[in-house]
Length: 90
Image (cartoon, rainbow, N blue to C red; front, side, top):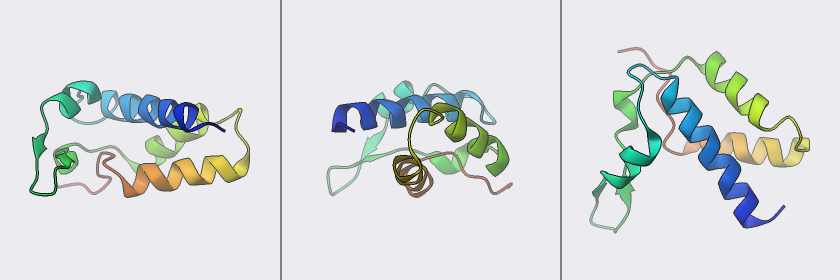
């Protein structure tokens, strides 16, 4: 799988995760408006958004249904270790 294809799938998953979160948000706007930290990285306020882990799994599974298990697991790990909405209720 090419890096571009992988990035596209991950981006699409983040978009859907945030659209289904509480409160809903547009992922691209979060990225565009993100603060830059001292290391030059964008900081997405993911803790401000909630989505149950079951819903996150459904979205990831749906987006990865045509991808083999190795890449699906790699994408899932990237999403959960990245800036996905939290699944811990406040």
